[in-house]
Length: 494
Image (tube, rainbow, N blue to C red; front, side):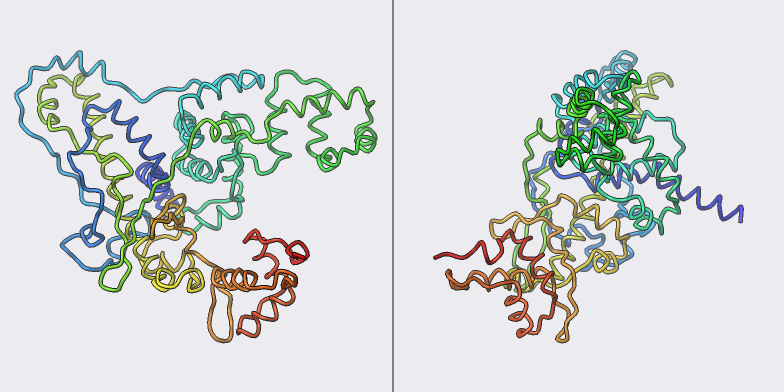
């Protein structure tokens, strides 16, 4: 039993140390990745822009030994990313006169961000404003803080998973139970461990980040405030138990629940209104998000195929002066900073190559599964799950989830998010049908309705049943609302 536990912890530590950055690199959007690459270019002397104008990559060229198909051997479930061969140094022997001691001392290091004391909302706001003005993303900011937090290796791995689940508004986008179930096969974790790591995350700036609902968001900010006034305690009671009454503006009921006068209630409400219900919003609002295609889709020999767009992120290479710099360093004091930056450069290049191959493999499999969609549109969308793709490629389902998050393909001039191609399966007598296909039929039926006699949800349900698609009326209503189509009573034109 002890040996098994040691083995489990060793595997978890390996994930934390070696794969955490690689997994995060896979999940980054092309825009965020380009920003991080540029930051690394600015501080790492061993990296430079590659001298290449190639922006399209044939999916077959990404395979070793010219193989014409992807097999599970190119992936490892326990590591989550395509494994690439060790990088060889692209170096040239160059005679250079370098002042290595001075050079080594002046190598830039990653920027440091000192956290403010969590005592006032004004300090927090000024701090966040200074960060957002530098275009640092919310998740990058959280990862910076996590890197400075003294935790064991497993806790760092879990904290990274939680940070990756934080949405742009600062809220946790996935429940702890879902996270445990999602990663439980790879990382044996408990809800208590996740709760502990979430408590750490909720101490980060911006105050309120990592909350699971509005009540918790406001509570975290109130708790972090300096002092412990009566108004603060009453405000905590209100946001914990009586937010619906505040939303409905039922002041009399609030006064009774809190046993306060209207004057005191006004102070409490004013305090709550000074809080930020969307702690991550300042990061969103200060950056313009540009979307570019990660994948190009082209039809070749009657089959749609995926091509990687490498032009949307800077292409890197090791500096040709690498060997000369390393040879010129004579003492350990000179060699150590150079060696650290060289290892960092190689690690980044390996992570980028792994990201490219993984994304291309997943996109290629999606396109292969959805050939009919590219020929005939939404109505031909097949049911597809993350597990279908992970099983086909022999990788973990979490890898697929991270890879498709925020990634887009370009098809006939349209940008389409990769996760669009994952559609729920609706079991029918004639075979499984995708939710996307059903939505397309509903949209078409409504488009053809008489303007003065719009089709009700009941009528839509009946027409779908006649076509062999038997779903509940409430499902039809839900799909119609997702299509942003009003109810029949609102569509009637005289």
